[in-house]
Length: 116
Image (tube, rainbow, N blue to C red; front, top):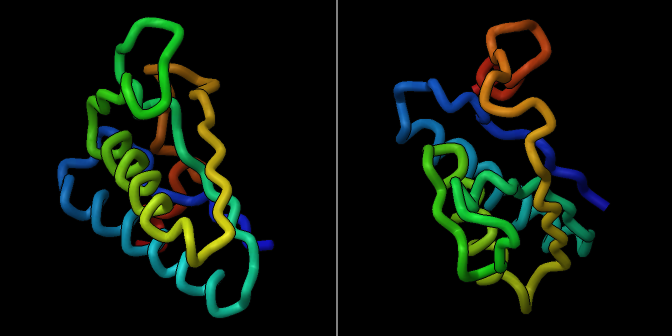
């Protein structure tokens, strides 16, 4: 089993292309690795794909991402659907435990930015 829980999640990053490319390309690499190893891939999606939609949200209907991070997570989910017949993928659509005021500039948050 491969756990892919990393992404550039800082919504204040000005290089939106970097957020999208890094998150999607890394996810695709993990999908291909999981296929090569015949391993399950459990990845982090995000409830941020719903934007400000009213509750309850419906998968496939109420997605309205409001920032590059949320859009990249939605595109990851769509990419997972494309690989459905080839890979064993499980997406966990987490909800933000911190809310809009989460601070990303500390040592542990958004580690992907430090490595990307």
